[in-house]
Image 1 (cartoon, rainbow, N blue to C red):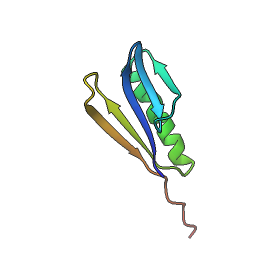
Image 2: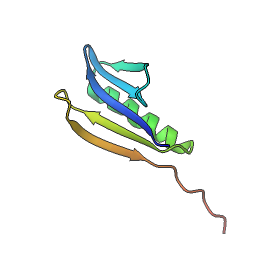
Image 3: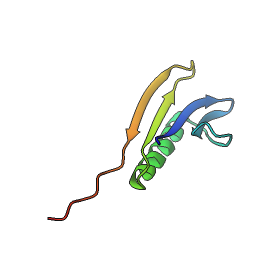
Image 4: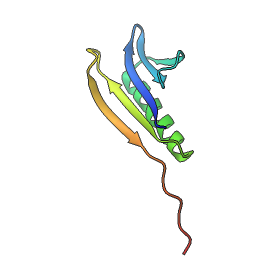
Length: 77
């Protein structure tokens, strides 16, 4: 199942929420929140879990999307 990481504007900065759970992280800037989301998505993919980062603008529209997919295991020759 793909993990969804959403970066959205918050009352005091920007939030990063994972899979629409109750808990979230708050960052001062959107760039900080996006960087944290990208790092986490790549760590999840490295652990074998696909992840998708959704970045929203202040008006609520979707600004960007990043998919991080697990890599196939290397085949020994």
